[in-house]
Length: 354
Image 1 (tube, helix red, strand yellow):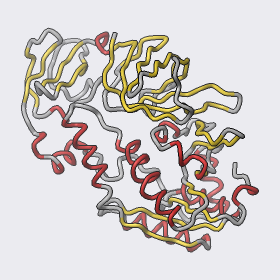
Image 2 (image 1 turned 30 degrees about the horizontal axis):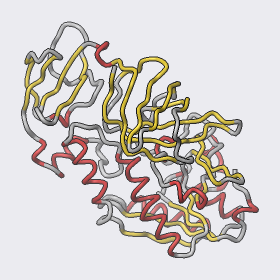
Image 3 (image 1 turned 180 degrees about the horizontal axis):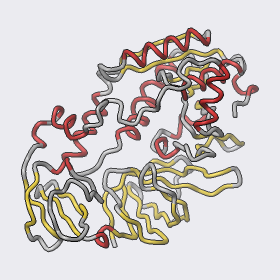
Image 4 (image 1 turned 180 degrees about the vertical axis):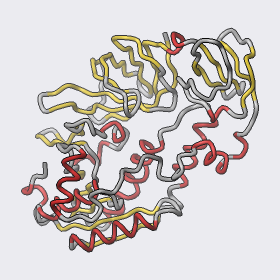
């Protein structure tokens, strides 16, 4: 819910994508009497239709509009995407982009233009009290706080997420009520720079050297078959491994040093501990272990565990063993508070342990 007292008459830049979420966000801010500017970021060569939609919606809403060409800056995300796969890790480009591009370069641009606040259509909330501003999970199943856990804490006071209490049905209903033309526009189901959802093909365009054959082995080192590149695999994968074992086997390990893919039965995917690096804290940096609800991937249901801060890394011990902890993904920590689930922070998963 938007506090009109907070933003009335304030200059607010809204990251607009041409979709229903950012369009309703802009409309809500306009109706709360903020001085709105829609800002569209161009990050690839396939953005024209979305840009046209965003510009049309801004015109219909009677707000200002800008488009910022960030294709050169976005190479940072493409390099991250390629390098993670080359290290046999499964990247999360949206989390990385949020930190460095949307809530990095785009946010900085908005502030340089005098914006008091920066808003997006994420399903999450910023709650403020006497000690500061904090990120909270959205109140519905659409919660997108996981994707925001790595943004810089210093920018939280300047953020607004009007859709934190909404679900998608409510957003579309409000869009129709407001006469927003994209109320029925389908949600994007893929990474923005991979419009055909062909991850391996896009990676091979960016880094042809990843096409490199190697061995598929079991945990004892026995050779089971051959692969044409470890970028075709991810931890927990069962389909497409092209090795018949008679019973279900899964990808349990990827090793870039030996260029091997390890397969095993499902119980080899089960671990109770993980190590993660480069923690990003959205609360005062914890010095002692703390109990939290923890997510290891975007669609993962948060589970209980204990977080052990260790300087530039964290150890997480889960209350119950988890399946398919995947290096390269973010692990995100939540604290149960009276106001909801506060995001304590996140880190990048390095390895799973028994």
